[in-house]
Length: 193
Image (cartoon, rainbow, N blue to C red; front, side, top):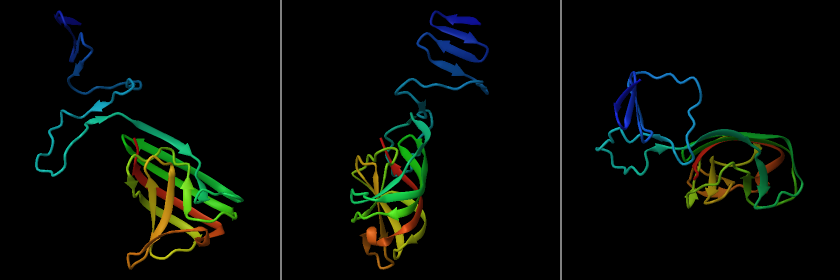
């Protein structure tokens, strides 16, 4: 332990200044968790930006990471009368503003509500004016043509499910596309706050 100056202490290859900044040279092993204060994160600003890129950097702080579970539900444009499940479950990972969501529902009855097919209960709301989520699906007993898509509206925890035909025509799926024993499993990525 050396007092390098009135405002700095040096411990082997570690320097701690009186403002709380720590400079560590060499490899570091931490036996416990690194806990960030609220609003703080890992600062990547020391990395030189790629000046040949066309993008514009707006943030270099990774300030959020979270894993958890959630319970997806199915509704038809806001109604869920009589919908029952054999199973339902979901997990998520949030890294910064990106949310990676997995969900599966197996219906035992689609009930009597009508309208567009919606999966509700997403763990975080979207922060985009229109967030066309990036989905991958595994479905059984669900009728559609082309390929399935998902749409999460701004400040919402609901995802509307639709399909785009090979000809490029888009339409939301409705209660008529769903059977009493429909199975929907998906992975989706979207922005949150």
